[in-house]
Structure formats: structure tokens, C-alpha cells
Length: 296
Ligand SMILES: [Zn+2]
Ligand SMILES: [Zn+2]
Image 1: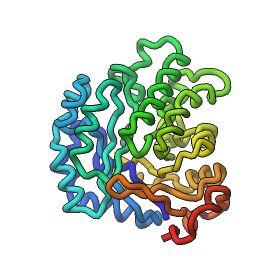
Image 2: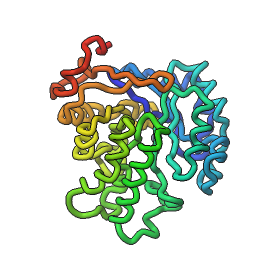
Image 3: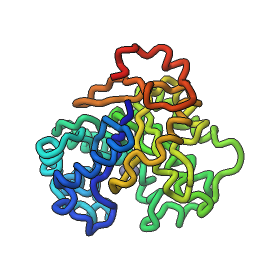
Image 4: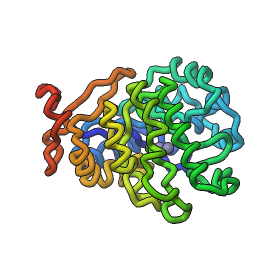
């Protein structure tokens, strides 16, 4: 089976209101798009910082501007008016672990997607508050990014590590460090391996200037070798992008020997075989150990 767990029911624009987008009809548009692409397991993961309760966790000026909606109304909407899994995309904010844990534990999410969008106050993937304005050296940004990613994994706050090499989002617009990038991936690997967190394979990078799936093949291989399970997502912000470019994601997964995907229910994880969905590139290794009954 296929999954798409990192979905937003609205765009990132401030004017994209909850009232307009958190409706059964809009959820159905995502469900219909998923069905057309053969995706059964669907979950929504709105940004935590769009909700007023997030200000209990962090008061970054960007969050203060964005935090307009009610988190419990969102949870009730997804549970009561849709057939989607209830998730959330929550930023890792060093030093705010306990406050974030309180926010998350008070609600019955199926899963929590953990993201690193900020390094201290500097944004990795936005022009506003950009970390790149003050950082002269891409080596420094990449190093800090992957160290923080490892801390996010090790925090135990999250079920899935989102867009694991988001730092490449700008493509050629921001200089990349030279040489073999595995020296950066290495910085996050211990946290990933020790925590047992799932690593997201996200096709969103293909729709950004990076023009690549997150994570890079070498990083995915390292994660898989370290025993990390994989969650597959598109990070769609509109129905048209649900399951976008999954043919390319499945090819990447096949090459990495990944034959199973994570499925979540009330923050419990099980593995389901991709088998049947994959068209070519027969998975091996991990797939061979997958129980045949999980191909539901
Ligand atoms: Zn994100
Ligand atoms: Zn997202």
C-alpha cells in the first residue's frame, strides 16, 4: 500500500483560512486525488505554528504573525468530519521540548511529523528571517542544520522526520558545500539511529528549486542502513500535489532496498509492504523480511 501523511489542507499563505479549507468537501478533494493515484493511507499534518496554542511553545515573530487558528478545532474537524489520519507538522525548537511535548500529548494525534525549519531564529527555507542572510559560509549552515536535525530525532518528540535534507531547498540559489555531503548527513545519523524515528521520503523537493526528492539517495541509504523505517509523503498544499511524483519516489525506495512503509494509528507504528504498488525495481533485503500478511 501507499501512504501520504504529510499533507496540508491549505497553502502557506496567511489568507488561506481554516474556515475556508477545513471543510469535508476540501478533505474529499484530497481523498479523491489520492484514490486516483492508488494511495489508500492519507493523513493531514497542518503546521503547528498556524495555531494559537503554538505560542505556548515559541514566540518567534513569524509564529506570532501566523498563530491565528484553534488547534483543538482542527483536531475535532479532522476526527469528526473527515476519514483522514490526524497528524501535525511540528517544528523542533531546542529548549522548548517540554512545552511542545505538553501540547502534543494533550491531543490524540495519529502521528507527529517533526521539522527543522529554523536554526535559532533564522529560517532555512524562507526569505523572511533567513538564516542565509547572516551566514557567510554554507558549510556552517549545513553543519548546524544537520546537528539540529539529529537533535530533533533524538528528542523523541516526533514519529517522522520531515524533509530530512531541507537545507538544499534553494538549489543553485544558495551555494552548497563542496565535496561528499555524507559528512553532514553523518551529524544527524546517531540521533536517527538511536531514536528509531521514521525518515520521511518527500517528493516536495522536486517541486522546489532543489529539484530533488528529500532526502538525497546517499542520505536515505545511510538512514536505511541505520535501521530507520520510511514514511512516504508529498507535502502537498493542494489536492493536485497529493502523491505527486510517486513513481520517482518508488524508484528511489526500490534502489535503497525499502519494501515497507510506516502506517500510524494513535502514535503506534506498523509496517505495511509497498508490494503491489511498486511497478519496477523489486525491493529486496528489508522487503524479504516483511511479513506477507502486511500487504493489505
Ligand atoms: Zn516543512
Ligand atoms: Zn509541510
